[in-house]
Image 1 (tube, rainbow, N blue to C red):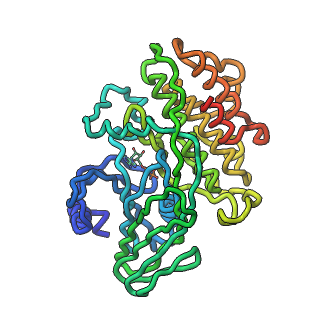
Image 2 (cartoon, helix red, strand yellow):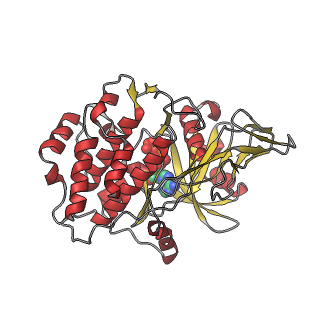
Image 3 (tube, rainbow, N blue to C red):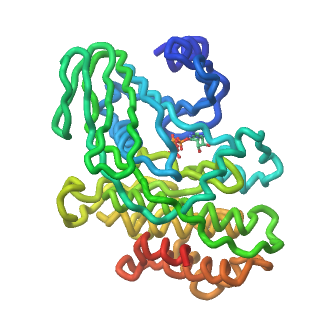
Length: 388
Ligand SMILES: Nc1ncnc2c1ncn2[C@@H]1O[C@H](COP(=O)(O)OP(=O)(O)OP(=O)(O)O)[C@@H](O)[C@H]1O
């Protein structure tokens, strides 16, 4: 398949789609990620190229990622621009995180983290309130040139040989901006069901910990504070929508600036219930595939028995906090992790951390890394802890 095998064809495909290939910025198990610039505007974007053995629409990971990104819009979740579809390839065009992923940044040190003044404006986010999640629902609204008429709702597919335009409309009129996502379909095919949910209320700046000098070589405490609050907020938003991420780890936390990170990589995303958001909450579904990054997997996932995905995300989030504090991955043996967070948790927090922040870290680790699922807090509990 030329598009994948040859860089020249890949660059040509991108150019025909309106982008100049810049470079490869990441390689994961499901796809490669490239930075590109838009030929029309010059703006930088990231393109994740997902390749399927047969039909891309039969590829669960690709479709899970696309459907999740289409349906979620949140200031600390990677934003989608458009999807380019080939029979065996999907390209997800999304915001480019200028500083890459948290794992590399922490393990390699922060020295390389430099931003142009233009990129610094991205940090505006922190001047707003992070966590007051008033949700506003938008149902998908499909417009197709071939159908010649508008269709809306979950059950409608819209088939168009050239392009499919999905334009969400505001179901609940609350300060929503109109947004649209374009699916360019190169094989002729159907669109995806989507519900776009937008976060409209103001965003809180978590109370900043008083500046303190950290003895820690890598993570500045105010960055840790913001980054952890932002990932928590992103995850809380997903859980509210009935979605579990299932791959929360530092390589999926993308860094935009010293005070802005976003959660990415929704390839393992799992819908935890069957109901639409307009109905009342349903019983949670059990998840029975056991993928994810080993060191970040909850004990119940490692046991390889059907498990609830949201509490497993909370465990992984605790592991991300461990990683940020230690600049190292948590131990593979979860007993060892639990022993550390119960017996020596204070030693995990570097000297010089503000007492308030230290308290948050200690309490979060102690609660999130509980082997017993029923005693683990919800993501909302963790969020509340970081708001106060
Ligand atoms: N929007 C982006 N901006 C900058 N870098 C990105 C972006 N998206 C992904 N990357 C980089 O590419 C890497 C791989 O991306 P991603 O995790 O989405 O791929 P994957 O195949 O799903 O990986 P995994 O093996 O973790 O499942 C990320 O860890 C990150 O370094």
